[in-house]
Length: 124
Image 1 (cartoon, helix red, strand yellow):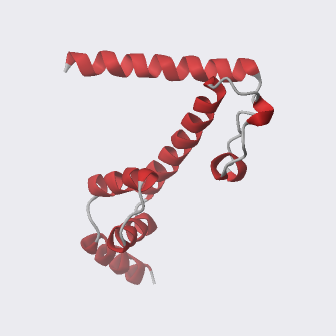
Image 2: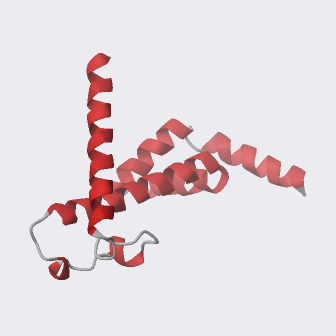
């Protein structure tokens, strides 16, 4: 049985794009609707590649955090922020459930990471 699973995985890896292309497709899927071929390639690859599965989960988590962070910076009252699919169905608490100090820590961490990334980019 393991031999059959192994053979199946090898065949799927041979017909799907490499991980680098899959990560680009996963990122693209956050912004636009993928074509049928791209969706098939992404989903098929995610069935067999745990590294790309983790990457996909991580970018969805970052997207949700960035979305919540953006809304926490707006001047709207917390009770006026509409419930969206990302903050309704996510396992990550929405900004309405985070204490002010937690939001400040997250904002500081994101700002520091962006600053560090900009320093890294200028050195290259």
